[in-house]
Length: 100
Image (cartoon, rainbow, N blue to C red; front, side, top):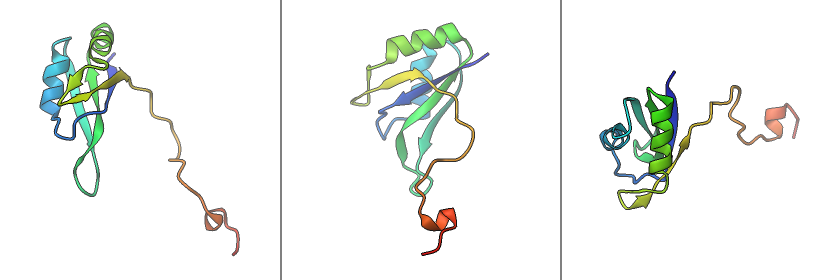
C-alpha cells in the first residue's frame, strides 16, 4: 500500500523532478504532482508525493518537514484523504432557490 505525502510552502520554481530526487533519498517514489493554477499554469505552492513504502514515507516526512527547498521552509506531512462530496463554496440566496 502506498503512502501519500502533502508538501506545502513550495517555491513557485520547484519542479517535480526536484521533489522526486529529494524524496527518493528515503525510498521508492511512485508519483510526484505539483498542483498548478488551472488558468495561469503557475504552481500553487504545494504538491503531493506518493511513496511505495509507508515506513520510508514516514521517515521522509520526519526528516523533510521544515527543511528549506528553494529558499522556503517546506511543510511536509501525511496527506489527508479527500473528502467525498462538494467543495463547500460560498452560497447565496439564488443557490437555495429563494426569490429576491
